[in-house]
Length: 245
Image 1 (cartoon, helix red, strand yellow):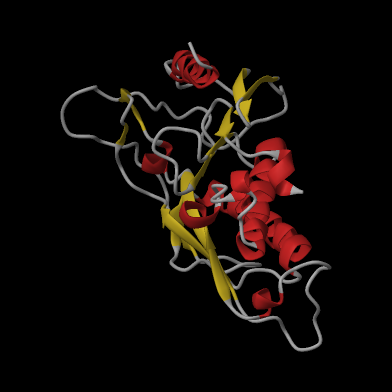
Image 2 (tube, rainbow, N blue to C red):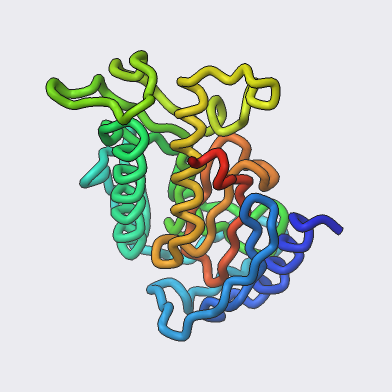
């Protein structure tokens, strides 16, 4: 059994009791298996909401208050329809993305793109459980847009001059190491990969942000980061410290 399969099996057993508070679960980071300890003080507004639903038939998600949030420190390309408690998590995401972008590019993004937030549906692999998207408790982030370098601002040392202009960075196009193994990765692509890997590592390691962080390396997540506040902790993303340097 692979490390990835071990982590999925662990989460299946945790998620089958969907009312529990956060518990220890397997964490895969760069395909290295770690253990995430439970924190007695880690509570969240939706911890007591049952995720269990009939495995067959129409999906009926629990009735939840929802709000449309467009971003504060960093604007979203479209409003995120989420539970009010999740807004604080999105603000933390904005702060993290801005901080990493300034380190790598010398300025923050002007926009964050997502593939969706609220969506009443099952977890495909576990049809007896509603997805965190069905509670407005998750977001799928796939890209960031950057404007031109502001007048008077400077790129970080060693950054390609081509990045003085506007550009987009996406998980689908830039997370993987195209050409890196043969020493043919362009400096621009390498920097985009650094940004995405550094952000993934930050989100994975900061337990105050999200409990679940999924990305490339987890089935069905090659083109986005899935971030949620389920009642268990799971991190599976093929991010490396080497790529983030």
